[in-house]
Length: 368
Image 1 (cartoon, rainbow, N blue to C red):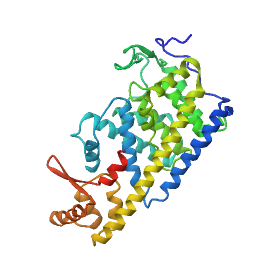
Image 2 (image 1 turned 90 degrees about the horizontal axis):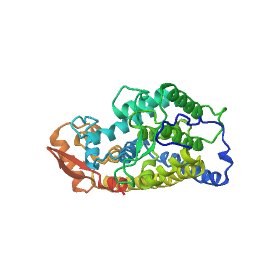
Image 3 (image 1 turned 45 degrees about the vertical axis):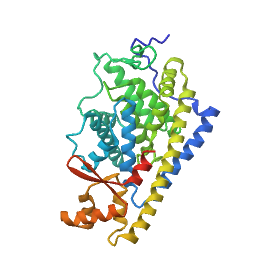
């Protein structure tokens, strides 16, 4: 009988499974795969797909961090990004979110040259999230998962992850082999992602930051298998809206080997998130086109490059516009920004001693 207060050192290794023969899972796999595939097609409509990755990945970072009860404001985040990552003076919660985003990007850039999930990559992601140089948790560290203070029976132990250096090393080696070795484990990549996400959370290899590391790993794995061309699947939003189900179905796999419900939950998360992400991309593309058509009739110097820049992040500093139009004079930049404000393309907002310029249309789309 499973004892939640004892280290789960008998966590089974991942291996061949007949889960892909389950009719419910097969039907959901078809619809979730189809929805996911449309994201890449939509991204190809953009003149520069990376411009949206900047904003959408920030939203993913914010929501993923909220799952761990770390909260910051949109203003703090957008201001920090517009400061070109010079955010030493920002609050700890904002730094946590920005480190998540940096870890996602670092992992993405690593996979561009070597599209294989490795233990080293996973540790690198964790290190960037937590700003540390440590690896897997040491064997003497007693880690237990407890109910939150707002839950029924607060403080009760609900799970104790495996403990011991050899156990963790064996489980993590098996995990990355399962993800990478398609001959030995010939499963659809989406099913592998669902199964591996449970396994990673059950192993709980780090002292902290496991949830965020695991959610980044989901995105990077989909990219490594060619299912995403950019890491923008906004899956944390679905999880936080269905948080109780997420944790319940995770624990059901551990206690009752209930894989069907867990995989259906994750596939549904992928499908719903893909639909929402596509809607968001479509809205941004449409708004970009409308803004450009309007602005070019009002402002002589307005061009597609400027249009792309003001849709690359919600908060813009004058020097960002200056870099595009090769203007550095403060007087000239003030004049140009005033034109954008007078034509209601941007809205000024003073934060501290600096004035930032908001793209209200982009913020409206991102925050709905």
